[in-house]
Image (cartoon, rainbow, N blue to C red; front, side, top):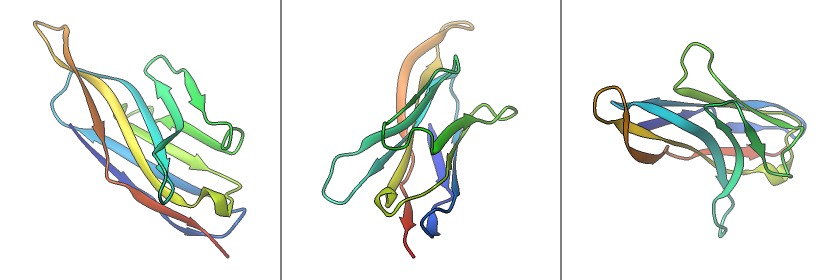
Length: 125
């Protein structure tokens, strides 16, 4: 399963940016899609996650500023709408998806966990 992320770039403080991530490949389903970010010298941290049931989780640092959403038509695509960006949001952002391959018949099989390539978001004046 491949994840293709896009949308990073340079934005001024207070500005907005939207990241996109599309999953492709031969699989049964996706149970959750998420965005993580990584600061230099730090471990990757969760920014936001949305499950197939629509449950959303946000880190405290981005709650009420960022919003995660799935494409209504293309369920294999996830967005991260970033508003009121701050210089401390500068990081490499990664998308992540967890799902299942095809099993027997119409049932899901073994799970998979895939990462997209990072996309750099720079917030600076």
